[in-house]
Length: 245
Image (cartoon, rainbow, N blue to C red; front, side, top):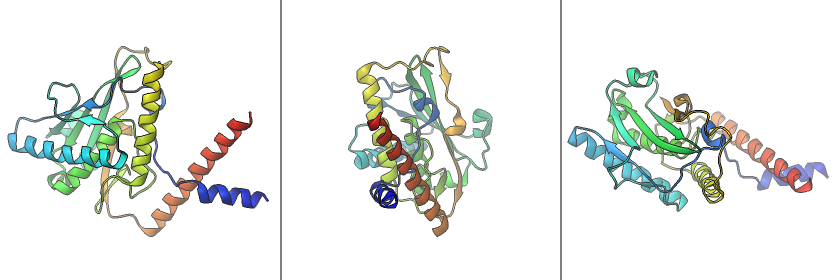
């Protein structure tokens, strides 16, 4: 009887591996959607490339989720994507292993601004296909997505050489994050941590895209799948208990 019950949960629970960032889980959110975000770069050729890739990245996310998330047409915004030639000094992160970082700042209960800093000296950011993956990944962080346990996901902690863009796990994570964001907006939710400081940055260590790896091995794929099933199973059990008490 119990074995049939558990098997039913395992077969009907999606193997989601996405996680949400600590600041989002602590109750911080965007006041309005979509958020304006723009490329800031003095080199016109590089700026044009970053703008082009950013539009593709935004379109990938929005096509996968059917959500309106970012507006890249407005240049008058604090939310920026920029190229750094001095990444280590500006971020205190390892320039050999970190491709980019997304930093979010809070003011009261809201995300006040976000900044995506791209490691301009990393060899993989010189190639458009890898740079596109980096930007797409960091855009996910700006909305409150952390790294995913699914190694094929765009939000995996390591850049995949054969990335095919936003995957189902990414889309599900983004949809859940935005659903919660809208709920907080509609209810005027204020986090108990909201006014500890006037403005603070979330930990950039939770938002870095780390070293490039080869495509995931079959074993790592099985581990990711098992972890996703377990996470989904625990969530189902938790929700089931909520309906009983």
